[in-house]
Image 1: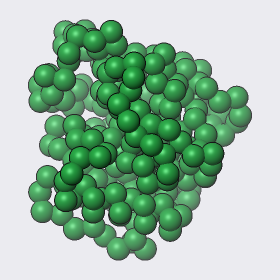
Image 2 (image 1 turned 90 degrees about the vertical axis):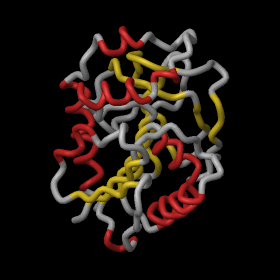
Image 3 (image 1 turned 120 degrees about the vertical axis):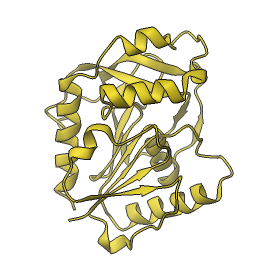
Image 4 (image 1 turned 180 degrees about the vertical axis):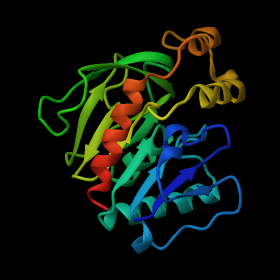
Length: 221
């Protein structure tokens, strides 16, 4: 099984996902080639500072690729921008969050009572770095929400997961993100200061939950 990871910018790396075996990076900021759909075992789509509706040639190509992968019933994991691209591909609407940006370490709370993932903690503190949100079709189920963003994590059908936040972050990738995108910190109500963000380290619990979610998706490869 081959895992493909789409990376949009150098400073939003796969983080702990680099521990996965047999993966290949598709770097959208360099020369890239998408694989044949039948060769995709698992597709992971990372975050980035661009928006789903930006007029970028390669972004249009990527959106088509993601949609085709989902249509072929392949497992997909989207993180931040990746989750927004999935939402767009499955018929949701992506738009700026009326509550403003959500940046820094904020809690998410389990919002589904069913047993789709019995290993999920009720509450987690995770890294956010987004200003957009999205609606979802009826075939998608939200399983985490935050104070200002309902759809923080969702499952579409049985094998597509979107995470609006960053489980994958390491201390090193966090420093890279803050250094490259510090201008995004605009002092909003849910935007922490640089010092607050860097004062915390990604938790082992978050990494463990991400690992369990990836293992779940790999079953459908």
